[in-house]
Image (cartoon, rainbow, N blue to C red; front, side, top):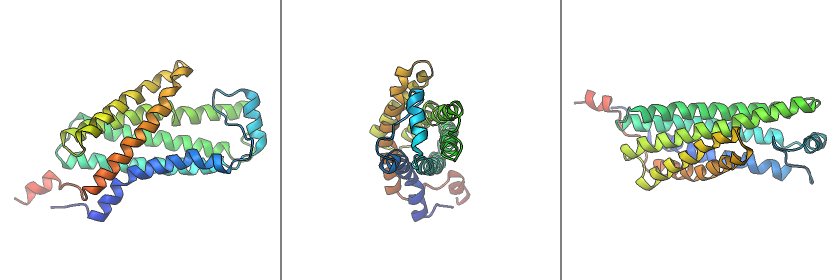
Length: 234
């Protein structure tokens, strides 16, 4: 019978918490090291505000890109850990497969957004306002609505699978399904800017699920043995 070592299993489980902390750093640190009076720009900002941001020569963009990339890698590790956990507990249904696939896609989208943000920070990348706005829109699209929708699918599917296998408490599983619904609504931000409120709502409330699930799974220690391995020992 093969088992994941206790310490290694805890580290894998805590990758969910690392995802939360890394993304929080990606959001907070750039603001702390940015120049005084530097505008906060979004795809909905005016050309004048974006141009002012480019003229400021902000050193904060690479920092945000680094921690966002770290968050993407941590999310990928946690996705794999959750997939293995539910499989070893006997759940090989559609929810487990959807959780694995959607979590991997969410990680890839977040990593793509981080890569575009890094490119935007390179010398000369902001010489053309239209090119910079295109890159900013691409970074927002991949790291915003598309990431949040696929992240919601992961949280919902993982919660459903882990409820069946009792890997998570029922309250956390139900919370995850609610968060998934909120995240999926972020897709409507592609039609109306007012719906963009679902992006931070799904992301920040989702942090609660990731932190709680990560800590609870880490406290339970090593992964359950694979049913195939159990059968081979009989």
